[in-house]
Amino acid sequence: MDEFLKNLILVFSGSVAALVGVFTIFKDLIIKYLEGSIESTFNKKLEKYRNSLYRSTKAYEIILNRELKYYEQLDIHLAELIPLVQDLVYYLKPNKYKNQIEQFEAYKKIFLRYTDLLLMLKNESLIFRAYTTEEIFQEVTSVVIQMQDDMHFWGEQGFLLNDKKSLEIDFEKCEFQRDTLLILIASVQTRVFNRLKYLSE
Image (cartoon, rainbow, N blue to C red):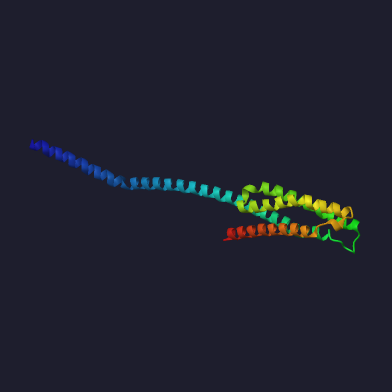
């Protein structure tokens, strides 16, 4: 039995020694395999993250470009609208240097441009709705609604001017309508400025 145990221990020791020898020989190969596997997994995850980051950055860039394009167009339209609404009042007032026909033609031209700008502001606010903030959309909507509400009023004033009934024109109301719209425009411009300031920080 002693002999059996000795043989068993020798076999077991030999197996362990052979196993240690094999592990020693293949240790570098195993380490390289594990390192390669870990590096490959890391690189795949890193590439996936890079792709995801690129896509989200590209999408943000597209959205931001459209938002900025909208603000640029909005600024141009509002810059044109400010003197236009002031001219609506100006051309209604009696002017001793112009005859009423020339005055009415000038008023009509301004009024028609006013209606064109109303349509542009309305269309662009709907087209670019998804690319702007809720606050700016609401402010622009307020300007559009005010312009729509005032359109009938300005049209009536033009008819009074054309019918040579300029004494019936309520200049206080004209100035009130003008000032109300100018305040709304200033509010839009302030909101856009604050948004651009936020985006630049």
